[in-house]
Length: 122
Image (tube, rainbow, N blue to C red; front, side, top):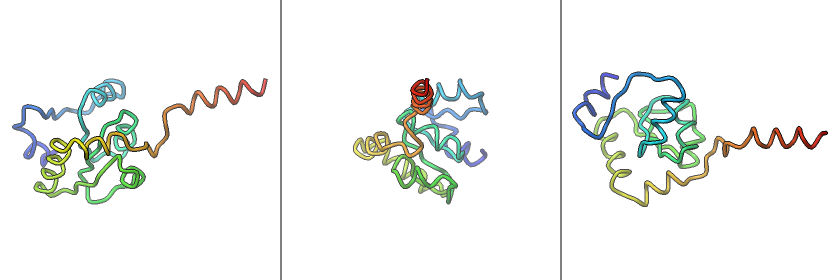
């Protein structure tokens, strides 16, 4: 948190927020341009909303997003984080590649398929 405030604290277009409940947080993710996080759960949620994810860690327990191209490891080095952000903010092709990559965590329609499977049994 301290590092994030040092790097992003003075930027008007970056909002550093305290933890939120799930629905308000998901609403904010849906409205943002991209997501910068160290949270494994957020790495799974953001691709469902078509948001590129920069992971500010050296490694992740969610390699599926990295492999699918929905997320990218930016590490913890300030210069590298800046460079990766700069690419996504200024290179539309790179941004779209990540935003439109196939979500490795599913398409969000599992409940619909389960309901249809149950209905077909009756």
